[in-house]
Image 1 (tube, protein in one colour):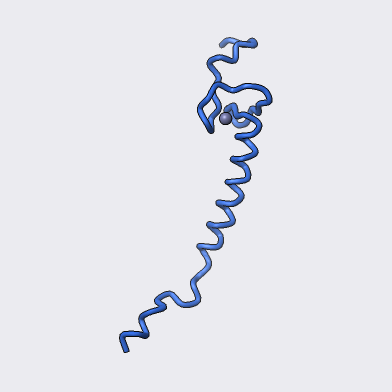
Image 2 (image 1 turned 180 degrees about the vertical axis):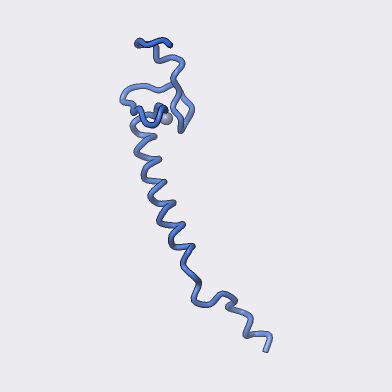
Length: 68
Ligand SMILES: [Zn+2]
């Protein structure tokens, strides 16, 4: 295992470009700080959307009544 300042083989886990400063190390992965914060924001958005989709629709079949 090699430690050092060789960053050339480290790639951002989000955009897959070589990481450059500023960067974040998280869960064994490197991210550009910007990518990391973008990802965190998207993740919280996705979580919120997923929660919204889990809620039952008030009218599951809005045009079912038109067949009457
Ligand atoms: Zn990146």
